[in-house]
Length: 236
Image (cartoon, rainbow, N blue to C red; front, side):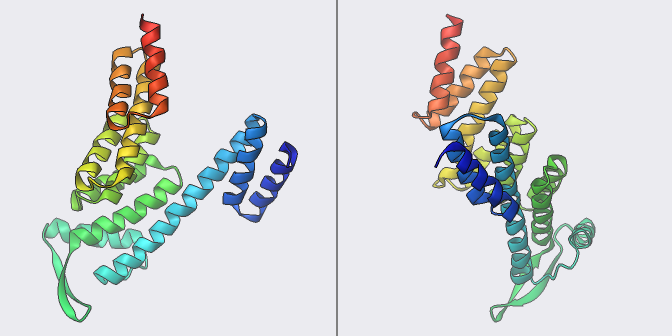
């Protein structure tokens, strides 16, 4: 197919709500010919795909709260307030519930942490990074060793260029899940973005440090190799 055919099919798929297949067609079109309008359409598809994934995760997490903790959520804000109030009265508040034929103790802070996480996912899906981070800060206070919470806060912090916090979150995620390649990949990418940001702000030494940090984790990460080479060439 030619450029126009890929674009036409992509636009048709967008109207049908199939953003994944639309993105594939826009990608194919851009390989044939650069085009700013199609690039923006592709980015819009990526945004919708990510937003839909976040909402699916939020809905799945609600089912987990209801199934694992035995807490029925009819209104997320009400649940968050209820369990926040419980913890204010008693930081170690808990209750007993029957689960898989036996009694188990449920900590109020775990219910609150999960509920805040769900609300943060909705905020992230709407690009409301401030609200997302505020909820995740509280969720991480409740459950400090949750890789999912650290992952999403890192993502949100990247969006507002708070690379220091994103790096800290991904490093902690790596400590919790040392065999998981995902936090390593995220850490490489965020070091690269901070390196570019530092370069743009004239901090060449800081930029070099970030690109070198990328390569300590992944010696074959091509963007960092190219960026480091360009900066060192500029400095000589």
